[in-house]
Length: 385
Image 1 (cartoon, rainbow, N blue to C red):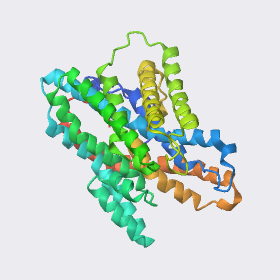
Image 2 (image 1 turned 90 degrees about the vertical axis):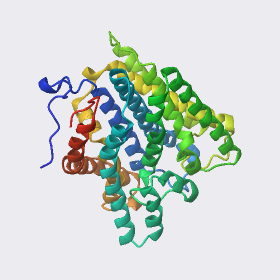
Image 3 (image 1 turned 180 degrees about the vertical axis):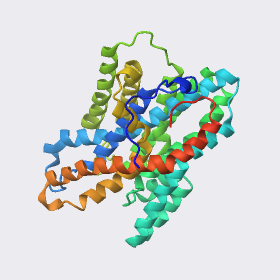
């Protein structure tokens, strides 16, 4: 049976309270927001190429800024990993890198490799051998590198390239936390930001297309650096000021919109040929600041203001992310694209509940067994199953 959405957020359930002292429901709500933005980016149709794009400029920008949900997830991931490992180091005077990697494998690999298998099956059934070759790169966590050289795959599982960047980050960061002081970690994050800006300047000089920029590990490391710095500067809020929290959450999309409208940070047709190196650096700085603003806003608001449904959907957000493009494509087969945008929009309305249903089943029967095994290797217990 599909597990039901819990009636209350299991933040401190009696016997589990001490074991879940690291659980922060507001971060699950951020996870859901990050996913939902990416879902909108993929589900909302763009106007046809023949349409006068100038008249659609603001609408396109609003859709395009949703792509920054992925940047928000990178920021959240670095924030949470840094916070948990710093807590482990504080409590135990050391961190276990071996247990960290075991936890990441049990959390990510089962669903990740299932997604790749689904993508390869689809590619085989439609006789698209290039997709099989491309997904082969994903098997060694080089999916983003494939996309940089050959472009996006026309496959529902193409979006898993982002997991490659996550895994590349994991190769470095636990060792850094084990070996460096907090000041050293802050300096490392600043080096990441400097490396991102150098990379962006070089890419702009070479008129890089969006794939070469967006899927570049060094570019996205600015988002990881943002999460790291937030975790290092984290403060406990004795009094949570809702107004400040909501203001920060709203400020994030405004910063993203400025990057999209004024600086074309993510053009629908691809390509950064019309934007200079400095402007591209400012674009991604605004995106990173927007991610920091949203994440900090949710932290200030705290768990008490998080809707239960958003927290639950955040808990199953990995499955939502893996399956949503497939659900969108399946939904679109039921609607005739020739009948216009309303029909395509309706397909997105069908795709969302379909994605949720599949993700709930996946979480119950595929992810949960591995998550229970993962608990054996946890030192700071951060979330319920």
